[in-house]
Image 1 (cartoon, helix red, strand yellow):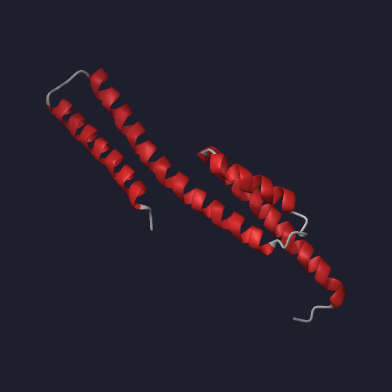
Image 2 (tube, helix red, strand yellow):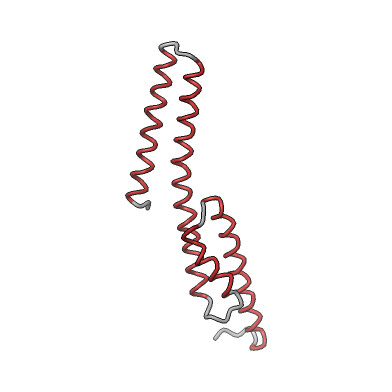
Length: 130
């Protein structure tokens, strides 16, 4: 579920876009200047884009936070990925939306490498479950 304030912000933006679209229809009905209509199209498109970005930012940010948390919990402090995990953890609060997917890939690589290291460490003991 989305946070209430995020839902409110997205709905506010969508209501603005709705008003802009209704304005476009009225402008068309009133045979207004095409340049004015085009400006309204651009404004409505930008508003819709901003609402989408709010949602995507929240979704990606939550996913990244969950993955950082999972990786931190799986790293006992000597997993070989401590530096990368700590850097991502410190960067997290200030990441821009366009950086989130890149950081998701980075933390996934760290997690995968940590799991590989763990498997390599268990090989000398055989493949018996403990």
